[in-house]
Length: 211
Image 1 (cartoon, rainbow, N blue to C red):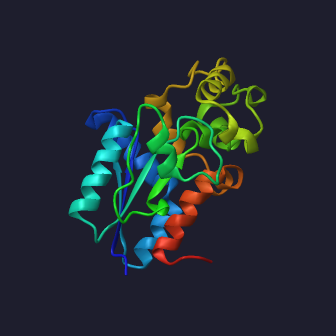
Image 2: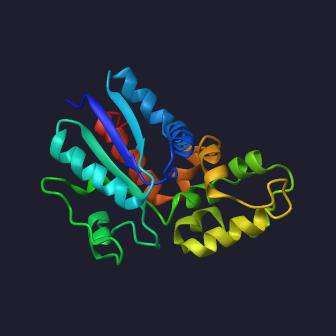
């Protein structure tokens, strides 16, 4: 039986003042599953690692030294991919990564934010408006169910246009990302984002909550 889940996630910058807010934000987004885990006496850790390579290295190290823990890698895909694609195959073939799947590790241990964390935000306009205020222009955004199909620069451009007239003036990853993670609704996001649903489904299965 699983006694602890550890999620090694890309993001949060590279200093404590930015990593800790990101950890809290991602923990808030995953709270529905985390709460169920704790009811089952399963320890739960979200470990922000900054760069994607640092997240991968930390995950590999954890698999080698703490194989009894249910370790998960969570990184951006960086480009749109089909839900039928093996995440490990994608990361091994992707230029700039070239990561080989560790031995005895299946696809459920590798989860992707497609194409990046910001796609989750596009999937919940209510969460965006809650964060940015009444002048947030949702008309500049693509349909929610197309969030994972957009390229990274298109997602960034959409957020930039939608936030132009708000007090924030623009979306900034470090300033806004962690806060938005605690404001968007994971149930709404998983409804529109297949890869987010894959992540939450894998976590639910790991803790034995398959209802």
